Structure formats: structure tokens, C-alpha cells
Length: 308
Ligand code: PMP
Image (cartoon, rainbow, N blue to C red; front, side):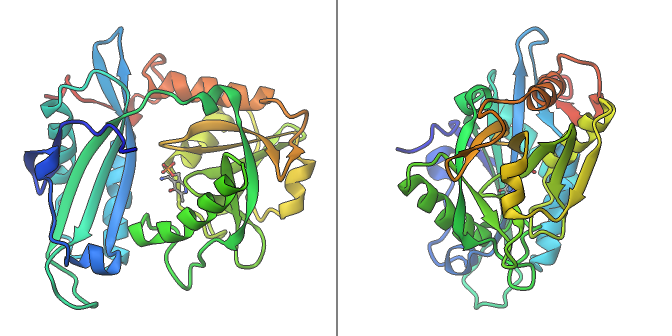
């Protein structure tokens, strides 16, 4: 079933209808998976009559970093990328919470080592808060290892990386789970197919460090900051697969996932098998900030209409 993408998209800075947002089938992105993806959220605040894009600057910075590592020509200024995204949201007059997608891709029909021309596409998928945020998810450990940094760059949101995530997620879903936790090639906890992992032990948060073959997630960074503001100690470190079974609570987080409690791993309950207190406290702080119901972290919210 196709996702309900908003009607207008942005292609290289031009607003085009969804069905005219086309690339050539022999472009570098299709042949070689040479592209960098960004997933952000725009939160509709009904009381303010405003949409807030969450941590736009950090997402654009990660996109530019990813393009650099992928050796795609740095043809877009940050201002152009921001205008492309915000212009697309305004062209759709979106008044609901959305998942925003940007892809910087290798265009043209050259061979493997081409670095340009580079294109930029932006679109939006209406997506309210999912049930998994309140209810939690049951998760399996993947038999697929998370891709290793000396093979492909996990800290870059390269579209090709998702071959790994997709295989792991398909496996978990075939087996009746709602999500998947991947281990590094060395067998340590890495991350989900689209989210970063946290667990609670004795009141402190523990999350795999950035050398655990994870994406340097912007939500993970936000969670760490919000937790520390609440006086919760956060450890970024190597985590063993079986240590998760000793956790009192667990959750994972991402722009699309938001913050979802993990109820069980490989059919063993995490803690008492219910969303935990610290998980709920982090969720409350997160949603207050992203939806603009709290004045805290105003710099993390870019208003779409106030800036029009
Ligand atoms: N890991 C992977 C593999 C992801 O695809 C995502 C989603 N972008 C995340 C983690 C979470 O990253 P972020 O918080 O920046 O959305």
C-alpha cells in the first residue's frame, strides 16, 4: 500500500506535483544506491496555528556531512536546502503532523565513481503519532549484523545502508515481531532498523556509544539532553546483547519512531513488560518540546509560517 505522500514535492528547488517528481531509471542513485536521506518531522501545533520543524539545522548539517562522506558534490547551500523543504511544506499548506523526507542523490548516467550531478528532492508524508508510542513494541534481535563502519558508513544516512536495515526488519516481521534490534559485527548492541536504543538500569540511561555502528541520531542527542536536564544520568557505552535482559526499561527513538517503549526482547519481558516510568518521563519531555507546548529549547523548533 503506498504511503499518503503530500501532493506537491520539491525537485531541485522547483515545486512539482507528486507524479512529476521523476528521475531517470539509469541515474547513479538507482544503479548504485548513491544518495543520502534525511527524515525529519514537522509538528502541527493547533493552538499556535503553526508547524514546527524539529531540529532543522542539525538535520541539514547531517545531510551535508553525509554528502561529503559519500563524496557527492557539495552543490547545495544550507539556505537552499532549508528553503526547498520549507517551500514544499508551504506549497502543500500542511496543517497536520508530518514526516518530512529529503534525499540528495547522484543523478546523471555515469559510472560508479561519478560524484555528480547531484539532485535534491523533498516531500512530506502525513503521519500522526503512532500507537507504538503509547503501547510499546515487541522486538527481536536480528540474525543480520549491523553494517560495519569499515564497510559502509552507518553514521551517514546513506540510502544504500537501508538494504541492511530492511533485511533485518523483514526478518523480524516474518517472525511476528514489531521491530528489530541489530548487533554489531562484534556482537554488541547497535541500533534498530530506524531508531536508536536506550535502556534503563538502576535509574540511569544506557545507550550504545557512537562507535557501535549507529546513525548519529538527532533524537538520541535530544533524549540525552532532555534526560540530563531531568537529573537522569546517561551512559554512552558498549552494551552486550544479554545485558538488555537485565534492564528495568527500554525504548528506542528516532524522528519517525519518536519514542517507543520496548516491552520485550526475543519474547523475554523487559522489566515488568510495561512501558516504564523513566520512559514515560522522557516521552513527556520530548513531546512537550517538539510540539512547542513548552518554551524550552525554542532553538530546536523552526516555525514554518512565522518565517514565511
Ligand atoms: N538509526 C537509523 C538506522 C535510522 O534510520 C534512524 C532514523 N533516521 C535513526 C537511527 C534515528 O535517527 P534520527 O533520530 O536522527 O531520526
